[in-house]
Image (cartoon, rainbow, N blue to C red; front, side):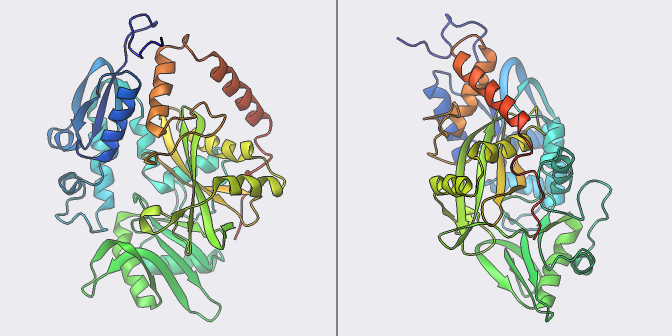
Length: 406
């Protein structure tokens, strides 16, 4: 009979989780389900609302502390963003400041993330610079790093398009998430311009998040959106032509847990925004593997790109990497690294990842248990992972390290 995770026969102290999250949210429920399935007690939930109102929270020395997304709670959003309407796009800079302050107010426990790394992960300009400094392939950007000139508005975007020969680019909120405030901008030689975005611009100039993807073709509308977003901070990136699957643009979300790529999902769309909540569809992962191999690449090297991106944040247990495949499936670039990119319900681990049969939450719990009890049940997986990491280090420049230009 197998032992439970907290069986006194196991070496080391028992593991107790505490989760800073929104108690009513499905993320908290999914993690609690995974903890119970591992034989652990239900995690102690510390509501984000309480943390924000009190300026922090205390944890016992033997508690393992997980931070979950503060999203999808109107009151928490109001406390972070300062707006009564959670559908408004504006306010992401204040959200960022208050979120990082609240994270720094968490005291005690064993953290599964690091506040300094969160500060980078939630600033696309700094995250891009960290990836580029580690030779992780990323789209070229004129706003990468702390020394880049800020984007004051649409005139600066137009100048960047002209000066850097970027007829197609992405304009992103520096502190945005879930495609909020993202515009895919493209111009033609005849001066025509179009922006694809989930932002709804009202006649009085207010901006709202929407599940409907819109296309704006009047430059004054695009300028109005960008000018309204600019005070919150903007990040610009060259738009890389992506590979397609069944005639639809495709990219991947790859979850990396404890340094290893464990889960992957293909996202496809008829437009440039592939986010599933904006109408994107899950694609065929086997077809992606076949495409990579047909192009002369190795699937392991593709996953290695994501693992190298995650390695830029060594004190964060889990990240979700958005991987952009170039046309032809030969090269890949990292679009973003997401601190809360593990919400992929019912998706089980990749073959050979050590997370087979586990969802993203169960994989994280298993990683924590391996750290807590390193002598129990990890020999084969640990050796396999070591060998795979050695392979990645030897061949890290074989695939995915060359910048993919538009």
